Amino acid sequence: MKQLFMTLGLSVAVMLGVGGVAADEVDAENSGEDSEAQWDLVDGVAAVVGGKPVLASELALALDMEEAKVAAKQRAGLSQEAVAKERMKTRLTVLKALVENVLLTLAGEEWCPDDSECGEHLNAEVEKRMTAFTESVKADPSLLDRVLKARGYTNIQQYRQSMKDEMVRQFFVGMEMGRGLEISEQEARSEMERRFGGKSVRDAGCDGVMVREMGMEHVQFLVEPTATYADLLERYEEAYKCYLGLAKGEIEPNEVADLCGVDVEVSQSGTGEGNRLNETTSFAPAYREVFDKALASDSREFSEPFVLGKAILMIRLIDVRKRCIEEKSEQDEIVENLMGRMAEQRQIRRLETLLDQLRSQYPVEVRH
Image (tube, rainbow, N blue to C red):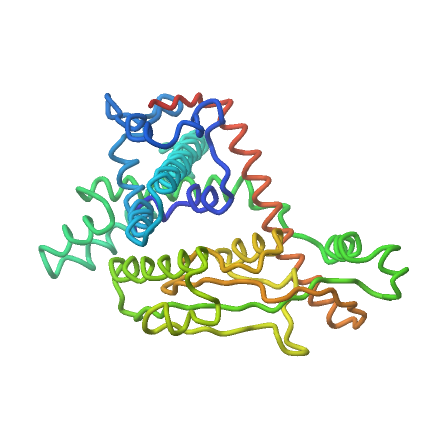
């Protein structure tokens, strides 16, 4: 996994689809045939944040994996126009994430300078981790270069600086956002009543809360546990061909297992009584993003393939219905799920606010 994808800044930005660059700083409308020209960076600098450059080489490195996914979609049959839009969207998202990383690093360095007690502690921790790293590769003189290259570094000094920058960001974000994120049970119960209770629910004869429940269908393209990233991309391409076939009506949902290649499993969940999923059910973030989108659109079509760990999935809603939940134990489970979701949303809002403050403190210039 490339170095960028270890950072908090990118993981949040990709998850949210929101960025550290204002709309007038990066023109997302200029996509299509002119996209390549926009990214011909004449001076090798993609952006400048508080006087610190984001190099074109950093952008290219960070884009490597995501560009490979877009290329897999293209080989699967996605149109040229759609591919151009996907590439531009990916590049803007990754550049925004890089900018956010720099913003957080600059603020962290100011908050925790090298000559402070915090800085001394941080540098000692970096040296401790570097020692452990070099010890782990010293048995094979060629292993160090291979490991660094696999992680996207050209030398060990780059790796050390990247590790330090990441720790600075983590320390800074932890201090700025580590307090007051908890959601109380009472807050979650009030939210449950607001969203799922109220007079209209009582008038419908429900002496509890009315929650949407759903059944889901999953298509999993099996991947070996030892698969490389190249293997994963190959399976992703196969999954995307299947998705396009479904979208064009060339494949029916009941034909997926037979027509979408080998090692494809189709299953259902939440379809039996007492085994229903509901709109507050906790999922892994990558799954929840796709699930929430399907629920919001009430679509019965399969989602685009997405990677969850070393699995490739497509999912779709089978049915959605409302159910009155009066049992306290079931309501308690909803409250617990809401506490987790509300805490995540509070963290996201606080990070957005922090990044807005940092943009005003450290000027951002994006170069096309």
